[in-house]
Image (cartoon, rainbow, N blue to C red):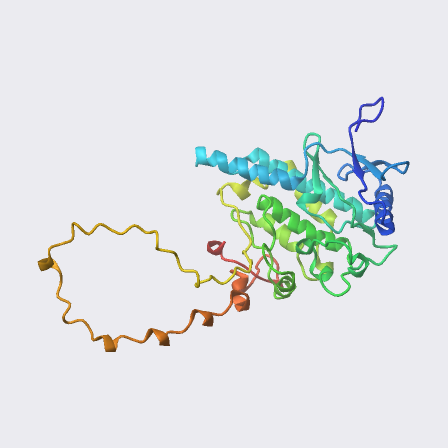
Length: 372
């Protein structure tokens, strides 16, 4: 859509179902929040709202390069193809790594603005960050945004919404799940982890009920292979169990700006090994079925025309008596194997609890690099 006369390309977010009063109210509330948040270079800004005949529409800033998550997936795909042709080549170039650092700076800057306006976004993730112009990242999708000073933000208040549990802070996963800008900082740490793994899914396959339990024991997302310790320290600082112990957006932003301006290729070092870390796969794999044995009826019969001479066949007269062979009926049945879902260790290679030297008084359950 283009603005008449000026030729400005905009995006129209159309409401699909206008029959629901709640849906209309939520749609208008999103527009209200965007207007109150105000214009900012790292937030998808609102141009207007269409309330005339036809479906309701928000007229938003158009970001032509899509979301960061799609970019990360494409980056990994392209990088792997190039390394097949030239194994000495890094998965991600220093230039691309510098872009990722820039996206981290931009998103943190947007969060800094939201905190100053007393808003919590509640869904910071690579899928909700879009790329505009020559590579500027902007936070989008304010459907879950709340002004934490004018209303109590709880899970009960959003019980009909689909919640991004694996990006949510530990305090948001329990009880009423009240959120603050410090909850957004937890999600920002997960966003940094997404950048460091080229868009891997956090806690892949882990059930939400197990997730809360594991977080309380100190487990956190593992450091991506090749990730600089400084970068992982920033991530980990966002995942402190006590919200007040997490850094402010301003503090993280200053650190990232220093790295970006020094052109040290902050994220470039993450990918030089051409190995991207995966989170443990917690998928509940089904127990193998042993009842359906392979069908050998169509297997060709071997040709025995060239069998060895009978004189060369060993003498089996000294073989044990058949009576000494154990009765197969007494062998434990396959059904006695415990189901994978009942095996607690099936949660994946969450290994031992060890002190995390980068943060005194904080313990995390880490994975050995060899286990990733």
